[in-house]
Length: 363
Image 1 (spheres, one colour):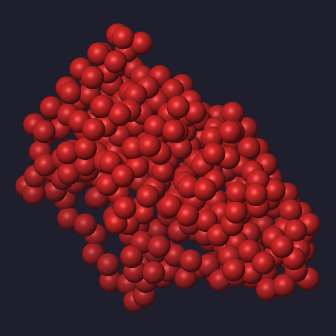
Image 2 (image 1 turned 90 degrees about the vertical axis):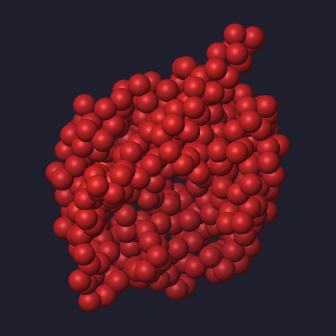
């Protein structure tokens, strides 16, 4: 049993149903609350001389995650996940790119593929500083969190996002026109590297008895991850199909459970293409800051469900009536914000359970 989530196995059964585009007793439903102040533990104090020093301090980061998780209640199907994180471009760092660390939970890499004469120098280094630091952080979290919480898979952005980080997105956009064969060759060369990196962490987490999860708090006991291509917001559907679709299909075939991260309105042009992938289980649509109102995107969610894919929906408590009027509980996961207290949370669970029983009894 996991201390911070004693009902984990029931949540995992709900998630298994989600991946099958079915429903157990209610949709996957996630929300958290802060514990009362009297029950909270203090966060470790940062005395670091720089932002980078704080990011790379394994003891501090693992203790910070431990304390933050200890201070919250993981209600419904929320997962207590310690996330070993060096930012979304850490894969590029494994090839030698420098990582810069920001104050607000993000990092970015410096492109190293200055021109295509350097492409043979793009080689994954298993002894790279950032690779070993991320491994060290994962190990520390596994040790500190044993029997208390789950340790997630790091944030990988392979494929188009990886080579965009190595090359620079603006330069890569031109390369698709001027050097298409070289771009395709690099994509094919780095794809197997990603599978090896994934398997390295998958084996580590599996051997520790962990379900597989990451920054998106769905989970599976099999190979689960979040295919994505944020770079695709810069290109047409035709170019997406030509350069990147085959890699996404291959990634979905490599995984047992997959949910595509579709980030921002600029990415919606690729939704039809993504929905054609038979091996893809679900879609995470992220409207972007200032556009999160559920009612604005009902038709997007309906389109995804109509294509036979699961969805994760980010909504407020006040959106639930519209959610239940417009969506199907099968293959649905809800991340609900604005839950003020435990009583409200319990009422939400009860309403969703009743809705599920009504919907499934008539289908």
